[in-house]
Picture 1 (tube, rainbow, N blue to C red):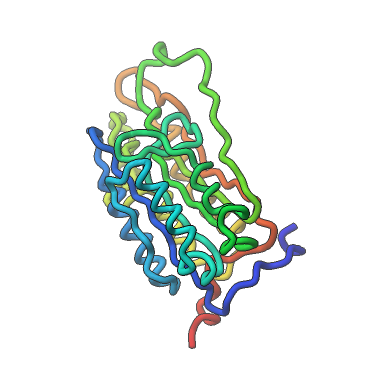
Picture 2: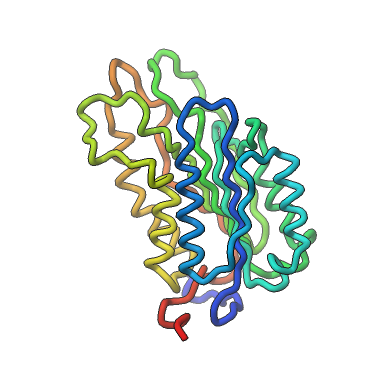
Length: 273
């Protein structure tokens, strides 16, 4: 179906000033160093793609600071009028896939609030332009425990919001999954090295660099295909004792309301002078 769609109008070298929101939650005992690695990977990838230097939020930003800063960004031409598209990456935590991510204090920020700031009515400078939101939010509800402690019913998950010309690509696989008490049967070589950051951001950036000129929908297919083996491996692992994973991991979810074909960057030869 995408073959017959029109393409968003972009510059010969697509212009973008990305936004990175990496949040470390206070009073968490687990390792949060993957956030630093993800931020570094994203910055290096955006530089390779020829994007402008990204706006990186402070890791200790609270709810009010994040929303206020995003509102100011929506009013700046260097992020909107002067650009071909918006690219915002959020790296944080969530609870039960409830359509929110945590600020530094663990308070929820609705993804809907973020998208609302940049919608057609509130941000004229991005009207008719693609708005891409990438989320890596570790699901804190995932753990190992005795099956007898599992709830009888699953909590209802909130669907992520959509707006015209927007795409949300969301992964909730927690980086701390490798730190859980797995049995000795789990091979070390199958474990993901969290020093490289999250598996999702690492894979996403790797595919962007390899698949220049690929429509973003096709790109998400390739990322999910690359993630599938890892997800299947974790879901099949045996924990120590008689515990079980509280919920099965799922592949990243893409929710798109893009009205045309869109590529984050052109092929290598097309951008070379």
